[in-house]
Structure formats: C-alpha cells, structure tokens
Image (cartoon, rainbow, N blue to C red):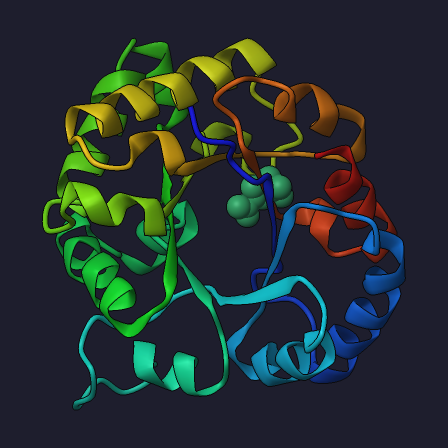
Length: 249
Ligand code: PEP
C-alpha cells in the first residue's frame, strides 16, 4: 500500500486581507518548520499572491476556494483555472458545502470543474458530505456515492491520484460539533471503497476530514487509517492553532 503524505489545509473562507494574510504566513512558517506534511492555504482570491510570494522556498502550497470551469468568457465575477495557475497557485477547493448551499454550485458544474482543474495542472480538493437530515435518515453513504459519482464522472481512474477528497459532514462545519473519529473513519473508508471501484489510483488519493477540527481533536482524527489529513476552517485563522493541527498530523 503506498504511503500517503499527510495533507493539512487551511480554509480561510472570506477572511483575511492581504496584510493579514502576510502576517499569518510569517507567523506560521517558523512554527511548522519541521513538518513532513503537505500544508495548503486556501486563501480568498485577493490574498492569493501575497501568500504565494511569502511561501516561496517553503513546503506550503496555495489553493483558491473556487474557480469557473470555462477557460474564459462572459462570466462576470468568475476566475478560470489558467488565471490561478498564472499566480503559481497549485490547488483549488471545489464543491465546498457553502458553495453548494449558498451559491447553488451543482454536481453538474463540479463534473466540469474537476477535469478543468486537472487539465490546467491544479490539484482539486473536492468536498463531499451529508446533511444532518441525511445522516439521521441513514443516507450518508448514498449521498457520498451520488456526489462522488457525479463530480468525478469525467475523471479516469488513473487521474484520481491528482485529486484530494475532503469528507466534510455539513452538520460539523463551523458548528463546533465534530464527527467522532469512528464516524469520520467510516465515511472516509467508504469513500476509498468507492474510489477503488473506479480502479486506478484509489490507494494514493488523500482523503481529508473537515468539520470543527481543532488542536484538541486533530491527532485522534488524523490517526485513523483512512483519514490522511484535515480541511480546517475556523481553527485555521490563527497561526498558532493551525500550526498545532499541522504538527499533529
Ligand atoms: C471548512 O470550512 O471546510 C470547515 C471544515 O470549517 P470548520 O473547521 O470551521 O468546521
């Protein structure tokens, strides 16, 4: 079985100006100097360049939080994969539940965005996860299967290794209510089984857990066999707290 390098990503959402982003990176880097993990900062579009410039020469990668599937066109307010690559951005969050719920991002769009990101050389961080109603109704696996089948419909098995999947139960995002390590492991193992059915590189895919990850629960969650890292929202806004999570991986 291949060794999967741990992957810890900070999802800043709509937080941090250029100045604040710079201060964060300056405070973070000395705290994670010894890490062997992939550390990724998912910054707002306006702060991407500031983070890119400060992280040169370090292991930190930079991700955007969204992109459009087309290369260019009349799509006011949107940004293409090529525009991100030009900034030396390496990854992009796709399908975050806030984009699905608040901005109407659909699985149909994601089925086009994931291959567009891969074609441009960006690493998609594809988010999937069930609502509280779905979990209570015993529909967690059905939701994950539907999302993954739809969103990866045009990704061949051998291209899977270039994708990171984030399992983010919606009921755990920003709520302080973390999935138990058993619940998170079970869902991530199920996701890996679904990827295995597609053949290709399922064993190499990094599967992250996201949902109220904090320094206090990171080690236990990240110690699960199918959890290869974390997508961290609230606790990623403070460099000391985020560094503790990185160093727990
Ligand atoms: C997220 O935004 O992806 C997230 C998991 O947020 P939080 O850690 O705040 O729950």
